Amino acid sequence: MKQNVKIQLKKVTKSDLDLIIKWRNSKDIFPYNTQYFLLNSKIQNDWFNKMQKDVSKKMFIIIYGKIKIGVCGLIDIDYNNKNAKIAIIIGKKILHGKGIGTIVISDLLKYGFKKLKLHRINAEVIEYNKNSIHLFEKCEFKLDATYRDAIWRNNCWWEMKSMSIFKENFN
Image (cartoon, rainbow, N blue to C red; front, side, top):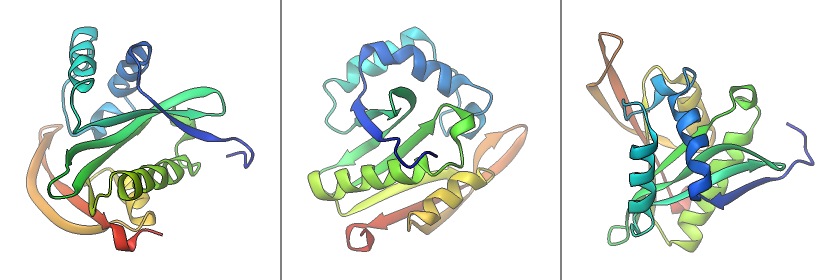
């Protein structure tokens, strides 16, 4: 990754939906998503319209330099219990492993802990998604639980890893 290229998070707009569909349905991303259905324009438009009124979701487009490269956010935000789940997709595979995910997660954690005043942020990862497990470990997430036989993929049961980080463990 070029050191002088800035990463920005911008609120998702309706014009981003086709890109999100493309990224999420790609053969490089789809098998790793915990929601196992292909997106289409109707599903994505319904999601976007609901999200406009839903305070439990804060979704952002990831911009690398001037190029949109992914989507991320905090979802299932529970303001009473001060926790949320984190989600991230770097849609351009060529940019995987370049440190962008680490920056994006750090920015989301900062937003969640400082602006939203959350106490805990959780990630759920399918056991075979070793890159994501490594990414969250690198960002100081700790394993909370392993849910056995939680996900059915490729005619096989897989574990779901639940990982989290607390506000006091975030620098």
